Amino acid sequence: MTTETQEAIALPFHPDLKARVEDFLAYEAELLDERQFDRWLDLLDDDIHYWMPLVRNFEFNRPQDEYSRAHLDAAWFDEGKQTLQQRIRQIQGGDHWAEEPLSRTTHMTTNIRIAAVTETEITVKCRFLLYVNRREEEVRLFVGKRKDILRPAGDGFRILKRSIFLDQSKMLFKNLTTFF
Image (cartoon, rainbow, N blue to C red; front, side, top):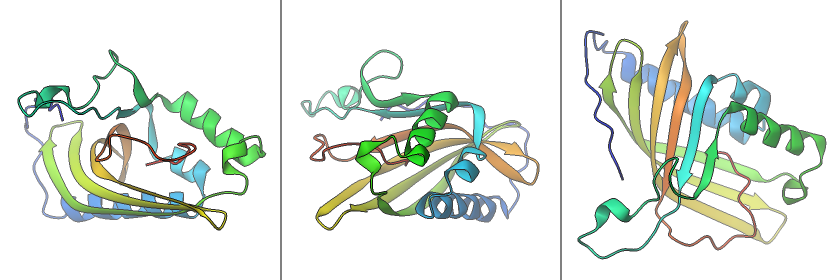
């Protein structure tokens, strides 16, 4: 996983910041699991970059090549807010065959850690487990790591960037319609 260097500066680290971030991520997961997609979109910054690279298998001495590169290589997702809105409109309009009937999901995040704080951004790293069930026989399980960049907004946050790193290198599912 590539890391972007970000200098932590003047914003004081409040003791309740981690609790506020954890509560925000739990609320976000609840919105997705309850299919409240419009309210979920409200949590996204207008400039969001929602990205999930491909996972590749390389020799042990090439860890930098494990994930495809943003804006340079193919990715499972490389989207902005408009594309996310379009996907949600398809699901809500019944025009999305892969989500008819709608999937049932359970989003879980753990190992939440604030990696950096600047005046305008909070970088959060976590691990996730996402269970997806559709119809009786379709079950999908996604496990991985996430790096979110949050922008303070009023009393809460907006998601400015989400990078999703799956631990599986091969998708064994018919489709990939889930929001992470």
